[in-house]
Image (tube, rainbow, N blue to C red; front, side, top):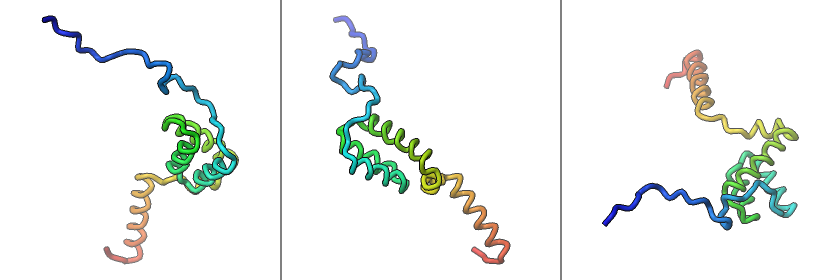
Length: 111
């Protein structure tokens, strides 16, 4: 009995799959868009993506793409509010810890 070729299946996606979707804004109510904007302005990007996805029945990728586009627009129109709600990341936390330790050391506060 001959061995079958055991390579990966490299078939093209079917036309009914989500792979052919283009980045198009789906119809969404004004109220829901305002809720998505409010979540973004509060720094709650993941919740905004989930709300958008639930409201439009879009894929996770499409929802993320659209919410990120909206986020970029909000950064232009509301730069201060968007900057205030950006996470500081690990480097920021370490920097704050180092500064706090330096202040504590100068003031004589022990750990």
